[in-house]
Amino acid sequence: MNRLKELREDRDLFQKDIAKLIHIDQSNYSKYELEKINIPVETLHQLADYYNTSIDYILYRTDIRKAYPQSIVKENTAQIN
Image (cartoon, rainbow, N blue to C red; front, side, top):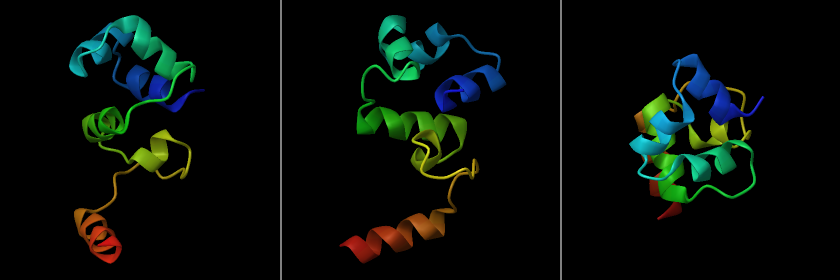
């Protein structure tokens, strides 16, 4: 099952609810769930924050659903800069 769909259904929401939250129409959101179009980075941030998960989880880079601790995020960002 698609991770976005799984996250949405776990909260008993409809595609139109999430589409409204991220300010797009339902048909475009549907394409995200069907993996027909790529999700913009800013939208990935919004969705990860809303679902309290990581972008890596949404993109199947990890099976850990919990969001990363903030200290790890800051530490990794500092290493890049």
